[in-house]
Amino acid sequence: MALARNSDSEEHLHSTFASRYVRAVIPRFKMPDNSMPKDAAYQVISDELMLDGNPRLNLASFVTTWMEPECDKLIMESVNKNYVDMDEYPVTTELQNRCVNMIANLFHAPVGEDEAAIGCGTLSKGNGNRGEELKGLPTDNPNIVTGANVQVCWEKFARYFEVELKEVKLSEGYYVMDPAKAVEMVDENTICVAAILGSTLTGEFEDVKTLNDLLAEKNAETGWDVSIHVDSASGGFIAPFLYPDLEWDFRLPWVKSINVSGHKYGLVYAGVGWIVWRTKDDLPEDLVFHINYLGADQPTFTLNFSKGSSQIIAQYYQFIRLGFEGYKNIMENCMDNARRLREGIEMTGKFNIVSKDIGVPLVAFSLKDSSKHTVFEIAESLRKFGWIIPAYTMPADAQHIAVLRVVIREDFSRGLADRLITHILQVLKEIEGLPSRIAHIAAAAKVSGGEEKTAKMSLEDIAKYWKRLVENKRNIVC
Image (cartoon, rainbow, N blue to C red; front, side, top):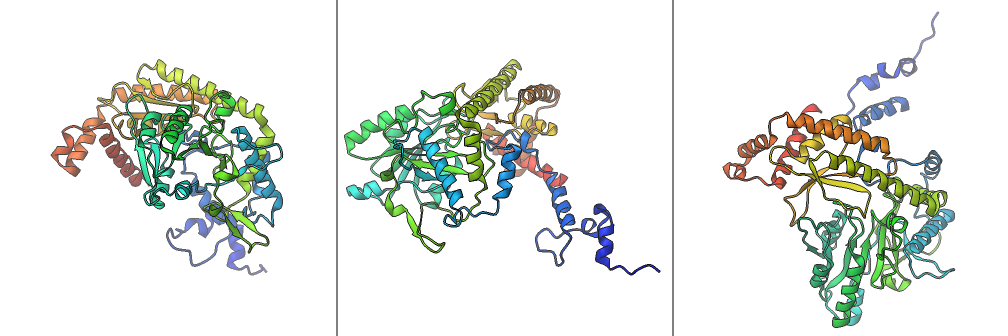
């Protein structure tokens, strides 16, 4: 006589894909009424994630997509530690402090042998207008001077904290902030001038040395105390290893603070950034908060609170595992692969290279002739091979330039570079045999926006309509 079995027991005898949990539709926007087995929940989510792009082929991103298995293990072992619980996890706090000091020394901060550097493992608010308050200058309308190529986080900061963002416009062939024009914009309400070491648009380093010299002259003439913050999110872990003689950091007296992304060329998975100040005096005490409800007095000057410890521990792993020699080797290899890709793209005869030889290892390039086909078509066509490569127009006043950009990371090998060149050639051959999409996009614009939109479409207009068409197509497929 067979023993009776309940439905839950029977469910576990079925194969995963025969399970009712996988066969039934899971609610998308409300919590399910009932529970499901852990293996079914895993399979449901894993199946959906298969439709994501391959991170290794995501050449739009600067963010690290590969780390060694030993570091992956450390990350999982510390994933349940809240970094903010410093009294409970003193060793993790010590590792963070070691990282801050290593970075400060890398950036030539004037820190003594036994002196602790000032910084933290997150994004923080800078000096603000404390200096203006002390001098009796107005503080009711603070501003920051940047280039129009600034990363969107600066625009967010300006909007959220009601700070005016004064942007130096770009021009064709010059896609970074002009130091002379930046200093002209400085006034008594300026908090700082933000220089970018590694523009996200072209990878180019801005001229921090010239900016420092011009700003020193203006400060001397006016009696102001306007400083420089260097956003070295992309270039901070490149310049010290590839361009050690380049003066962009605390060797320049008006550079008071520097941020750098550990999750970019710091070679750590997404989730860790660093900021260091020149000296303790450059971080006003009134920006430091003290809390005591976690077991001890704990100073904090970050905008966020709870966060994981894993990436901080991973950063420390990379520092001691690779050392200066290892980082230098990796950055040199990235630059070699960038040069190989650049040469292959130039050999097609179809593109202009807009990125520079010195800077972040990336290749940005535009079509010589965009009258029939655009970089947006090329980007979309390359997706069928798995490549994720962004196409975009430049900021003001260079909106008429549209480019493709390939970021070279540690895990982008010479073999992948050669394969990408082959696929670009294949795509060029395919689209040359197709009718122009410009007319198609213009027709779509005419239907949706009237005759005047079709009179003369800029690349920026084409980019907007192309994006809309592609998104509509993907929505239909989904």
